Length: 77
Image (cartoon, rainbow, N blue to C red; front, side):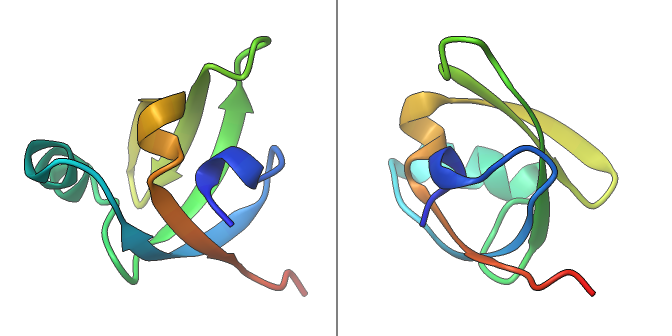
């Protein structure tokens, strides 16, 4: 599953980040990299932008970038 498949409030672990090297580097600086824990905070009405929190930083990802971030859903207890 990717960030695009996540529901609001869902938490997950990043498995892989696909995309151009510049995009992967930018995401790495924002705390989105393999093994990082992320949470989906908001989704725009047209599902074109995804607000993700990774650690203490928040990032607004476009649909094309969010589709390249593969995640594994965390079980919430």
